[in-house]
Length: 285
Image (cartoon, rainbow, N blue to C red; front, side):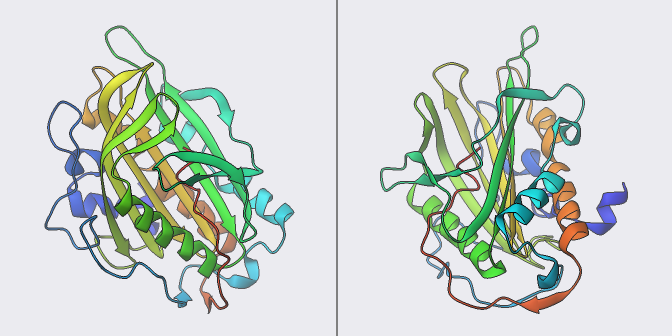
C-alpha cells in the first residue's frame, strides 16, 4: 500500500503483530498490551513531562496560527467514513461541538468543557458499523486537535498518559464505560513508530447499558507538530478482533499522512511554556 512506506504508525503492528489483534487477549473482550514491548505502561513511574525538541516531520511556518486556519486544517485532515472501509457509516450525532472538548476529572468521569487557550480547534467524528443479523454494532471515532504550538500538543499527550495511569476505569458518558484500561507510549523510533513525534496506545473493554459488553476497545493517539490525531473502536456482539483491526488499522496513519502533507516538512523546535489545560482529544470519542 502506498501509505506504508510514508507512514508506519501501524508501528503498533510492529510491536503487537497487528494493531488490535496482537494487543488483545482472547475472547470475552479481554485486552492487554504485550509486556515485552518498549514504551511506558500504566505501572511505569517515569516522568511524563515532555521536553521541547525538534519536530522532524513538520514546518512550524506552515502550522496554523489562528483558529480559522486551524479549523481549515482539521477539515483537511480528519477522517470520514471512507478511511475506515466498507460498511462504515456516519453515526448520530456525527460531529462534536467544535467549541468544546472533554476533560477527565479526578472521579474518572469525562465532562465537556470549553476549548482551552492552548488549543486552536478540535473536532471528533463518530461512525458505526450497523448491527446485522447476529452481529452487534461497532462504534468508531476520529479526532483531530490543533494546538498553538508543538509543545502544547506534546503536553496534551503527556497529560493523557498521566490521566490514564490514574484511571483504569473511565465513564465516557452516562451508561457508557471503559474498563481494564492499559496504555503504552512510544516516542519516535520506538515500537515501530516512525511517523509521529509520540504515539499513545490504549486497550481495554467498552461496556454500555444500551449495547452491552464488555467488548474489545482500542484507542491510539499520535502527535505530529502542533496536531494531535486519534482514533478509537468499540466492538460489538459477535465481532472478532480481526474484524475490528481491519476497520481501524490504516486510519491514523492516513490522517497523519494528511497532516504531513499540510504542515510538513522538516523544521524548527518548539519553545515556550504550555497553558495549564486538561486534555481532550480522546475524550471526545
